Length: 74
Image 1 (tube, rainbow, N blue to C red):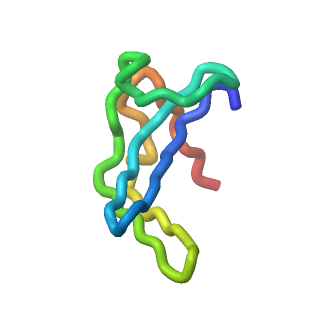
Image 2 (cartoon, one colour):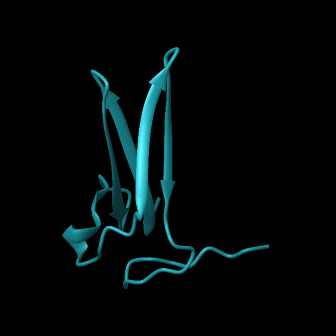
């Protein structure tokens, strides 16, 4: 997963966390800020129901920092 923008989330004991990560190689993803970028999530929530964890988040289609690539709308 070279040069990947990744959203990772978790739910534990009813509390959720959703964060914006980036990796330049196949190494462990780091927070965008580690590489000089910004957290580009505009909103996020996570919940667990019947053993299934669901993440819902908003992120601009066009990147606003040097780490992001734009989504291509087909």
